[in-house]
Amino acid sequence: MIDLPARLEPVLAGLGYELVMLERAGRGLLRIFIDKPGGVTIDDCVAVSNHLTHLFTVENIDYDRLEVSSPGLDRPLVKPQDYARFAGEQVTLKLRVPMDNRRRLSGQLLGLESDAVKLVVDGREMSVDLRNVDAARLKPMV
Image (tube, rainbow, N blue to C red):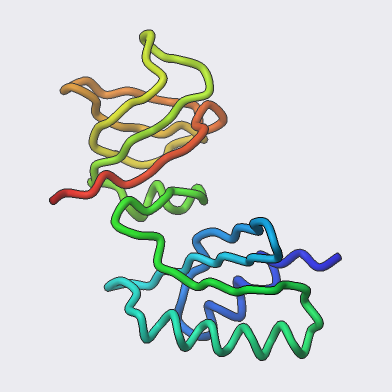
């Protein structure tokens, strides 16, 4: 079976996009989240959807429905590079194992050092082992 994320990353990079996340849902739904500097428009999603539809046909990749979307304002931080890219932004981390009796931490992201997420929470610098991060998202400033 094909490693779909590994196949899509260079294709999307060639089009000027980053693969943020890929989900397979019930009934053959394939959901792909893309990003680019400056954000993603509906026209970007349409262009990527059309391109991938042709690619999937040629490469015989099984799916029934394809959704291409931006990751949204509360973009997930999925790859280690995301923590460096979004340093300075407000984030929310959901932890696997609580720290200071808290399973969720919100604060300013400082970056990633030696597999530890650095952030400032309530005025205090904290270090969280990346393996303890169950989910991380940007916190939209509205």
